[in-house]
Image (cartoon, rainbow, N blue to C red; front, side, top):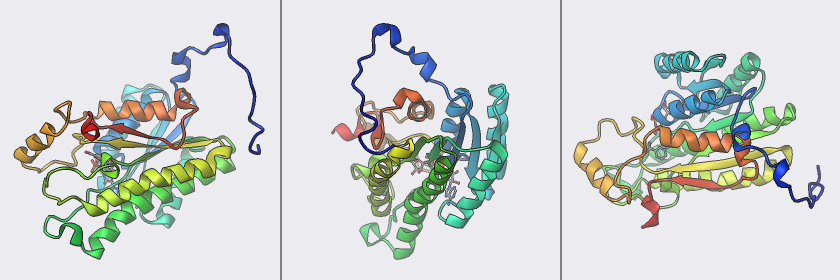
Length: 283
Ligand SMILES: NC(=O)c1ccc[n+]([C@@H]2O[C@H](COP(=O)([O-])OP(=O)(O)OC[C@H]3O[C@@H](n4cnc5c(N)ncnc54)[C@H](O)[C@@H]3O)[C@@H](O)[C@H]2O)c1
């Protein structure tokens, strides 16, 4: 379809409106979730499977035991849904190609991608004098990793001519600099790559829109995902005071938003970023 051909002036009558429940489904779809051995990925894999999608859980091979456990629970709780595990490194395009090929071979295609694998950043000693090595590692996984996964999956969606929905995990740190120290001194690498993910999302949304591929991002605030395990309690308490809701997000509060963006409930949404931050960035 060329630009302009989609134009049609027609106002739906009330009898023609679709019940919301009918749109909130992923039956017959296949979803790939990267970083599915971690907290947020586990919640979104579960959410997408609960809407009927077959899911491919992806993480580094060191997460094998956890990933297999997640896949087992997902299949037990969602009758008829297939959950498979694939491994690799999102920062390495060749590795991404291998695990995406495996998903297509085992599940047939890919309709939904949650490009979510990531690491925390920052250097408590160096702050914004961060070493090139730390900088490159964070950017490699959190930004180039998103590009790699999305590009290879978009090729599948184009080849199979069915479009799809891609959801990238950015962060509220892509919008603001986290207040307070919390041990990582403003995380310049993390903040920069998450802001870049929001912009990358918009570019992809424009580039792939006529292939029927929607691309959006989510920007969580502080989520109790396991990422903060090992932090002393006091800085966490201090961080909670900075949030209007005075609490962190649960995993359920992320899964639902990604599920919404994955389904046809959000069929007119592309290139947008949804903040899920309990109001942190209001102030
Ligand atoms: N937890 C939060 O407060 C929070 C807030 C905003 C954004 N995020 C983002 O959410 C995403 C998920 O984080 P989480 O909180 O679930 O953390 P997590 O550490 O629980 O999960 C991240 C997962 O990504 C995997 N991963 C890391 N490097 C990888 C690589 N090279 N290839 C494949 N997988 C790799 C890890 O093994 C891990 O299982 C990240 O992108 C993170 O930046 C988290």
